[in-house]
Image 1: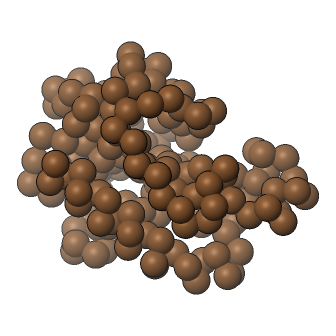
Image 2: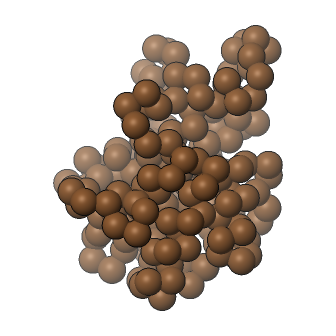
Length: 174
């Protein structure tokens, strides 16, 4: 059994913001694989399933995402190495994807929450680059991660998210 987590913030106002790349990735994965989300959130997350793989979008805000991750992993007895967390990274070039089987939060508050709630960093993480130096020079970090993707950036999403889906499949098959 494995758990794939997309980090983001719940609610319409956060759609297509940089911090919601994890949600976008899982929604794209579900469309690509003709899967559907359960209607009713469970254990603090919107969830879906493909065989013995669980997918969740925590419904606490980004910085508290670890609560739902821990609830799912404990309830279904999923060990940390069988968890993949997908998040944004504003230090990586837009569209660059970085996979690590374990490691630090790198300052990402969502990952810090997951680290705390799981009691370790021995879970996989997939970071999706959202950097935009022009915009980042005009606003603070919080405003930047909560800003919407530009029209040009949105055009690149299918290519970026398709690559993320391939990485999700690699994790599942490993």
